[in-house]
Amino acid sequence: MFVALDQASYDEVASFPRVKWFVQDGGVKTYGSRGYYDLMHMRTKLVLLLIDGGVSVFIGETDQVWLVNPIQYVQDKFHDKDVIGMDDHQFRPAAEHRISCGGFLFLNSTPNTRIVWRELLEVHKMQMGYSPRTAEASRVLSTSRSSNWGNEQNTFSALMRQPRVLSVAWLNDDYFRSGSQLKAANFSLKNLHMIHANWMMGVEKKVQYLKKGKLWFLVKEVCSM
Ligand SMILES: [Mn+2]
Image 1 (cartoon, rainbow, N blue to C red):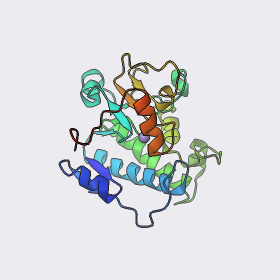
Image 2 (tube, protein in one colour):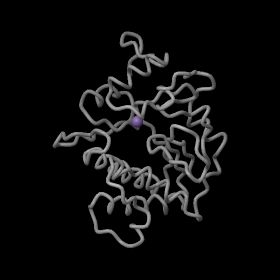
Image 3 (cartoon, rainbow, N blue to C red):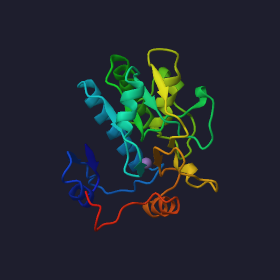
Image 4 (tube, rainbow, N blue to C red):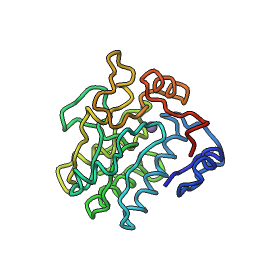
């Protein structure tokens, strides 16, 4: 299912199941802005609705290039896990320091996943100032007021690390890579299954880096939704 944020995108994906999420005020949606985190909150809510309804969810974003079907890959290798995440760091940290990328995440609709995702939604409500903080939530929230102030992926990663309930698997960093890799001088396509053009802001930058990495395949005349 595609969630379209403007009319042009909505029209482009006409042959797929799609929903409109046109935000009326049209405010800024750059990373770190309230508009951006409001959108992430809406996504978190939508995902809870789906997993509560028994639908397993693979969150993906349109700034990614898939060379292998990740849904099949995850189902083949990790069907017994609650959550399968991809680390969003530039360098490879130890498992206890990993940050799960919020834009590439498989959530199996299990009772454990539902409990933790509901908790994420509650904590994120407080993080966003939609509801007052509790002592419990304050322990999970970062006190930093950097551009990460409303970052739900950091909050989810903190919940994943709590020693309980969730059974988690991490995708291989050689196959599934963050956009920081695209910027590396020694970038290579070897083993690549998926790359996320994050760690860079704005459509132009993303297109520019994907072209540089030989990962731009869209030719309007022959490749259209
Ligand atoms: Mn993205």
